[in-house]
Amino acid sequence: MTPQPRGRGAGRRRLAQQWTAQDRSLARSQGYRHFSLVGRRGRARDPIAACAAELEAVLQPGFRLLVPLPELHDPSLWCSGWLSLPSREDGTSQRRPMQILPAIDLLDGQCVRLHQGDYDQVTRFSDDPVAQALAWQRQGAERLHLVDLDGARSGEPVNDGAVKAITAALDIPVQLGGGVRSLERAEELLACGLDRVILGTVAIEQPELVLRLAERHPGRIVVGIDAKDGKVATRGWIEESTVEATALAQSFAGSGIAAIISTDIATDGTLAGPNLEALRAMADASPVPVIASGGIGCLEHVLSLLPLQALGVEGVIVGRALYDGRLSLADALQAVGDGRLQDVPPLGAPLGFGGGVVA
Ligand code: AMZ
Image 1 (tube, rainbow, N blue to C red):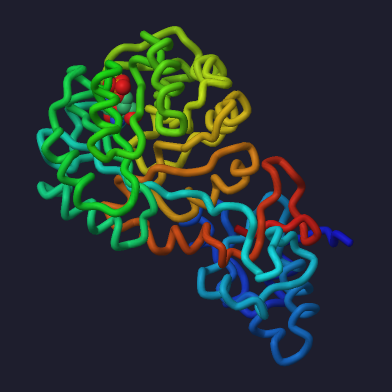
Image 2: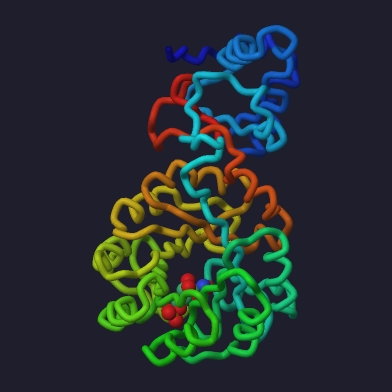
């Protein structure tokens, strides 16, 4: 049975304030509806029935629910009938949680973020990249994303000192992009402990090099596709091409690359939210898993990617929001991790109790 959500007004009248989303929090959360005490009131009676009735009354079509993390870990606060993650007998989910990759962009030996990739709009966050990398590892990162921004612009390695020190200091796998333009350079990096090497400019200028490297190092080569209005940009995003990002992604079918990092230049460094449409197009086109990059500003932005997981978006790169403290890595990992009880429907699917709507 899939009860249809009813109007907001009715719910508002019937429910205690703390159960319903307040306008203030709706505005802050860009249309997500928060339920801070889902199910609590029903606990004394029949929790499932009461909770379902209460939520049904306040749900509106088109809203997704965002439930605070502590509640996600208390199964008694949830109603049956919502789509659950497929689970094994031991109760853990079968789907691998979305990977969250903290980013360290290196410019002149420092950790920085650029705004939309513009080298004239730099925010410096740390002059100790190794300490920063260790901090992300301590907070639970499973993989680190490194970019040599000087290298991307010049085509030459510039921040190798920091790159090698980070790689040596960390236990988690590290991937690096920026200025890797030859087979020798890629193999040098793979030999010195990097887990994966990201190729951007050469993916469009010398695709045969990507194919050769992927054949020699299956699963360790990643293609970085950085797009402006759907067209690929290269060389530190200073040069624009007429090649469609999705067509470039398709051209690597069967090549053995590990993933495609899909960066939306317009949102990168803006905290404005990911370009879901572009990501969906990329995930549809890409023969290999996609890692989303650009625009993450808060937890809800991370959660908004979960419906794309089924299409092959396996991870997300986060930079400025982590440095700023707008997003905690621990919260993000918890929100997408095994403890998450509800699954999200595919994009565009009708929302309702039977369909499951909570991330
Ligand atoms: O911010 C930028 N201007 C920028 C950036 N972050 N320019 C390039 N890059 C990153 C790409 C990819 O990971 O996202 O550098 C890598 C590609 O470098 P190259 O040198 O292979 O094109």
